[in-house]
Length: 196
Image (cartoon, rainbow, N blue to C red; front, side):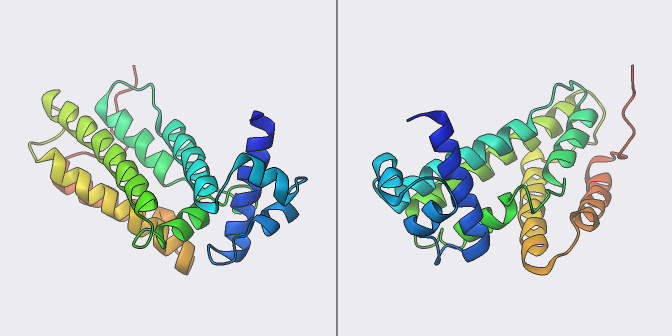
C-alpha cells in the first residue's frame, strides 16, 4: 500500500473517531473524510478491526517517537518523559487522546485492543523503571521500588488523559501532583538537573 494512501486513511479514521466515536465509525464516514471511496478503503483493509489495528500501530509509533530522549542523566530523562506524556495536543490537529479513549472503551470487548493497550502500558512502565533504577544507581534518586513508581506513574498518566478528554481537566494540574509525589518517593526536585 502506498504510504500516502495509508496515511490518508489513518488520518481520516482519526477524524471520524473524534467526531463520531467508535460506535459511529464506518467505512463510509472514513471515505467521506478522505478522497477515497469505501471500495478503495476495503481494498487496503478487509475489516474495521484490521483498519483499527493499523490505526493503533500508527498511534503507538507516534507516541513512542514522542517519548524518545537523547538525555543520559536520569533526572533529565524523567523530565523529558513527563514533558512528552503531559504535553497538551492541539485537538484541531491531533485527536490522539480522544481516539485513544474511544478505543480503550472497547478494550473489554476487543481482545486485540486490550492486548495492544497492555503492550503500551508495559512499554511506558519499562521506560519509567529504567529511569528510576538508573537514577538510584547514580545516586540521584532515593532508594525505592522502581516497579511501584512505574505503576504509580502509568496509572496517573492514564487517569490524567481520561480526565482531560472526559472533563477538560488541564494536564498540567495532574503533572504538578505527580511531580510532588515523585519528590516524596525519589527525593527528586523537578528542574534540578545539572546542565553541563
